[in-house]
Amino acid sequence: MDWGAIAILGFVLLIIGFVWIFSTRYKKCPSDQIMVVYGKVGKGRASLCLHGGAKFIIPLIQAHEFISLRPIALNINLKNALSNQNIRINVPSTFTIGVSTDPAIMSNAAERLLGLQRPEIEELASEIIFGQLRLSVASMTIEDINGDREGFLELIQTNVIPELNKVGMYLINVNITDITDEADYISSLGKKESSKAVNQAMIDVADAERDGAVGKAKADKVREIQVAENQAESAKGKKKADAEKRIYVEAQEADAVQGENISRANIAQYNADLAVKEAESMRMAEVARRNAAAEVEKAQYTLEGERLRAEEIAREEVAKLQMEIAAEAEAERLRRTAQGAADATLAKYHAEAEGVKAVLEAKAAGYSSLVKSAGGDAKAAATLLMVEKIEEIVGKQVEAISNLKIDKITVWDSAGGGNGEGSSTANFVSSLIHSLPPVHDVAKMAGVDLPDYLGKVTED
Image (cartoon, rainbow, N blue to C red; front, side, top):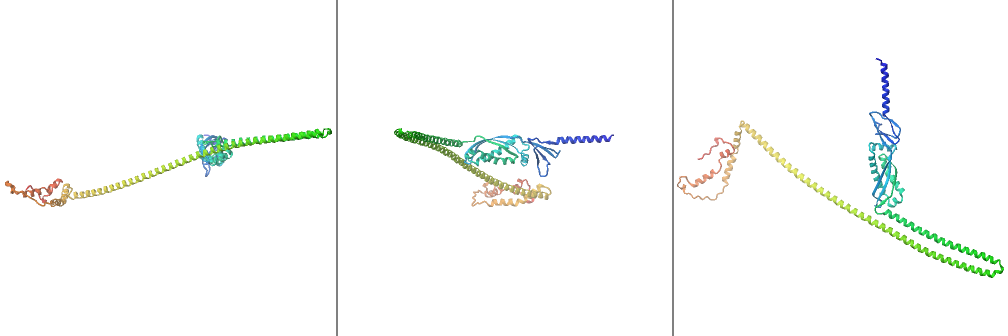
């Protein structure tokens, strides 16, 4: 046998086995997954999480699973959430989440998400987001939620991210679409702002028209004055035209005065028109303000009605619960009373049964001893018991006769009536005595024959 060849073959097989084990137990982690190694991974540790890279999984004492890092988009359609003003609003939104690669958060994912399917992870995340979104809405007013979307999103992230981190996830993005409410409060706010913008635009247009008219009037006046001055200068150079110059200057001055008067009239007309427009703008603004106030008051009345109805329902529920508790308490008291009475009755019956049992056992023991003393003759034992009771039986017979109260006995006797039977009085007494059962007859009724030494009763 070639031991060298066998050794070489064994070494080759050992190398092949080692390579096979290493190739099958050396696991690489893809970039879009987390590899969770569990089993014996270190003192005080439940698992080891890896993002990327590779690790040799020790056979028998370690195992591994993967958790996907792919983003999850959740449509969170929050309805009837109460704001800080107790106004119910609807907040449709889309949250994009995923499993975090932060080492501490990855450990949470390994503990709470390992083995869960994607629908189960989505349901868990949706429950967390719904709760924190309601909390965020409840801490803000409608004006803040509608007007400061950036602040609203920051508050949502502040509330949602720590809760997601607890289960190994983090928030990638959140998108809030149109927010609505049942009382159209948000729509009323938009109408109010729109009315303010329209009124301000009308005021700006009126200011611009006024400034344009005033500027035009000033420009016309300056132009006319300059023309008059130029013409006057030309007239001054002409000696022969002094009179004409004076006439022309006066005419120009008159025209200038007329132009000023026209400008003043135009300005006055513009001011009047402006006043009318300002009054109209103020009227429209006041109407819009009153409409908005009416809508707000209507919403307040609606909310107050809902609050009163909620309080009434709460009072009714509390009264109903109190009645149910009182009924349950009364039923429990009656049940315990009945149980106590039943236990007492049962105890009484048990005690009576135990007493009767003890008496019967004592009598049975006594009868057994009596039969044993009579040499095993049960009839002789019964005779002894009957003899024991003879005195009591005779006493009862005597008592029966002694208790007869006969004040007077009248006997119509013919001294036997000549039939040789004796006195009727004697027969009466004899019949009375014979009406009592003899002791021997009583014993025979019990199935016992008394001994002869107790005497016999004959017909004589």
